[in-house]
Image (cartoon, rainbow, N blue to C red):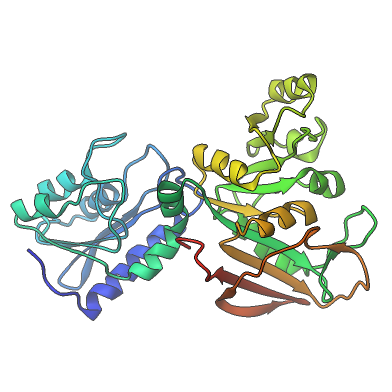
Length: 363
């Protein structure tokens, strides 16, 4: 039982997508789904999946509807991912919607891990449509889609560079290139990711904490074949605020790994920590949908050489250094990116976001 989508459907789906966007970085390994219940042009309730193991977006919206004193019977449900049909950590959302007596369900995307709910809804006399605002939903849920269909997370590369393309001075010391306002933007953006990834050199030079603005901090991940993560580093000493993982291989000293493990660092051994595919597969297996790579030349060089970046977030300063540390330390292959949103000026820094267009999968 289906009806055609209207401009009004797209309007309400965009509201559900805004709900979903709020949950980016909070629900891994699950997708941060958004949902809105509407009847006669009025929002009866809205909800989003807030954390893994918590209620899904549809029960959240039904509960919100009840809290507002509304009856969901006869409502249209707008949800960014098709309602689940199987019992997992929570009961199936299809049954919750059927029991609530809704008249119609509109989904932005089908769920590749679930059965098609069409038959269940049809038996209950509920109209079901899928595909409303699908491109936006594919972008919001792109990290989860990439992990469940390709076994790797969506990867965003981020760096701040001088006007002439250097990450910083040649000497091993930290120097801020971007403006304070753009640094604030960068810290806020971190909360939309499941993990922030750097290499051992970035830890040595910057002694960074890699925390986000606010209370939601992603995991901090260090890639180092030899396990180069000092026990007194800012990352390790701030583990009360966010977890730290170390991706290493058998070149790391066992006694140092034991010391880090005793302090609470999560150890992620791989066969070869220099192999980008192995690193990304390990992060996907750990449940990361979206990762942000903030490393230096070695990590960026490896990711670019492997064509691993699905997106880029670039901060270009007006400062020219003349010479310094390159963005990448190795040969690269040609890749194509297009602007995701118009660039903006923040202080002395141009902030730009780019999408890969040469077959990187869901973005």
